[in-house]
Length: 252
Image (cartoon, rainbow, N blue to C red; front, side, top):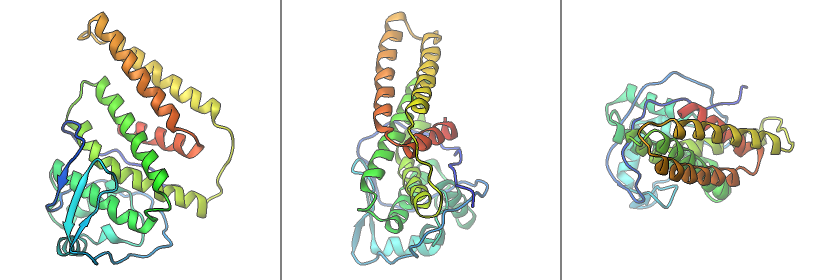
């Protein structure tokens, strides 16, 4: 089976936030179908508490009652499917069912729900470090392009949706390690080329931005070179390099 990959969403965004409370219903958007990742684990029951904090990252607090989660997953069975569908496809499937997640902010809620249900299948503790690294990596890339493009709501919405993309990447990781022949080799040269290309793009964008003064350009370059170095520190394996490239080229 062909390895799955991310799809470009039509998301827009708001501003970056460190803590968000989400406790309402779902929303949506339609995208074409793609490959899925097989899962050993089957759909599971998680309705054993009155209130569940479904956050897969400490920067976003998301609480649902047991009754709400049960209602949501009954109405949106793709969230608790045996398979691991990419988040954009799942969101598209939800839109065929109802209008619960048909606005941009509602879509953010959906991606957080998606991340929670998929994490339950993937394993919370087993892949905790990989999850943390992927979320940080994707958010650094999102921040970098947000700064290059002068901000906008797209990058704010991505902040929450990255939880879904990161969790799907965990499924890809599981698939590669359990079902596929994993290639193992040194990534130093590829990583260097990726970061060099990113730095060149930053240099071209910043130094050809007519809205920035020379002083502002120097400060912006310093800031984004540091962010690129942060990205480089997170890319320690071929998997992280592949996921960084895939996420960047699919979304920016």
